[in-house]
Length: 231
Image 1 (tube, helix red, strand yellow):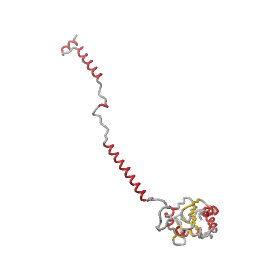
Image 2: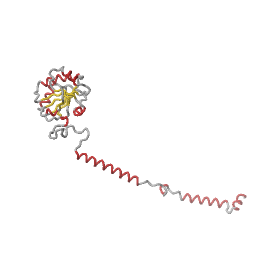
Image 3: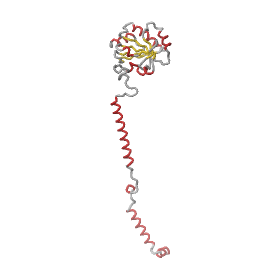
Image 4: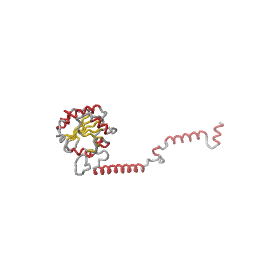
């Protein structure tokens, strides 16, 4: 045929070319392409950045541990530390720090709780606009008549920093039996004796430790029970 003669003229017959192609195809099937996993050109995971990151993390952890150890050894409680720890202005005294905080006396001058060391203190936190605080004043007047000032001291402190001494004096004048000390609080004192709800009563023992806390109007009888256990 014409086609056969054409391929014979080119050096190989058509049948021989077909056999050659079939043979080559068989070789390709028996030698598959190399797997990607075996490809030496595949990028390996870089180990150097991982090692550097591990060293950095170790240094950070070591720094934190050293810092904590140093601070624990120094005995510094930091901002907002224990209110009752350490000494105040007098290094020879063991009174809590709040004892040395000065408060403005509505009658003039200032006072601090350390003046009453050796006595039980009833600390009344109030404000002149507070209705329940007025009811508490009645109970405190009765309490005042029960104990000697040598044993129990009542201190009423206005915790509203917006109020004036004249407002407190006018408030006190409505209670003739309220012959105890009235003072004006400050931000430092409010930190030691917070009063999110008033009236709030704190009872301090003879060593100036807070031993009782009462929120809301507290009767004279209830206060007496708590006071008697610390006399």
